[in-house]
Image 1 (cartoon, rainbow, N blue to C red):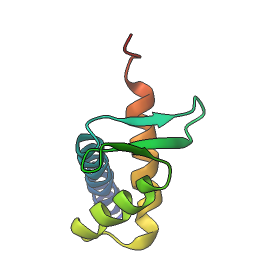
Image 2 (spheres, rainbow, N blue to C red):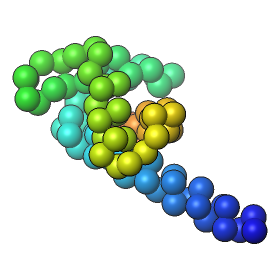
Image 3 (cartoon, rainbow, N blue to C red):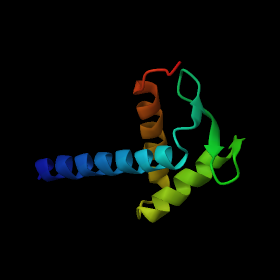
Image 4 (cartoon, rainbow, N blue to C red):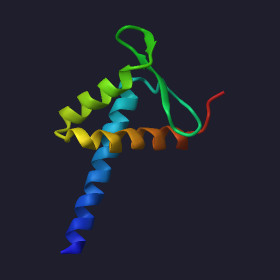
Length: 91
């Protein structure tokens, strides 16, 4: 019984990571974060501006498209931060 639960959680982790990658690609990678992981600014390609409040709306929208519940957006946000912090800095 526990093994199937672990498999289901692994599938959710893959789904959270996939949704996070979609959000990063939608912003063309234009997400500024602090070193400890707080998201500051997001680039909006439709309006060609940097926005401070857009990331929450984008995460909610993509979670809705992936049929995730509202409380699962925190997992997606943490995956976005993990992905961005694991990338090397571009100079």
